[in-house]
Image (spheres, rainbow, N blue to C red):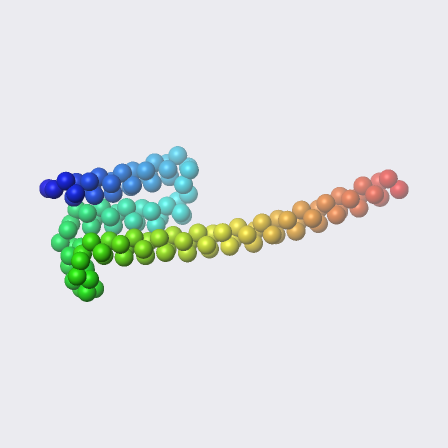
Length: 118
């Protein structure tokens, strides 16, 4: 085994360990970790099985197999960005709803306090 393959497999294993540890400690929610776990497993498979990377690159028509890793990385980052855009949109809607409820509660509290003074 060459040094680059060992480093790639070690990096993939470290990524998987970090994601699993973050999940275990409750710092990363399970629903957000699925893409990270998938990326770590794919990286581990591709780094340990170089022929697979060459075959996939040949099927797609990519002449330089390591370029396929950049394509995978780009697609992964695109999926992560899309996922977090959906999450942020949902949080934005919830934030707006909470602000409206708070305004209504303040108005109701103000009306109750004014009736109590009169």
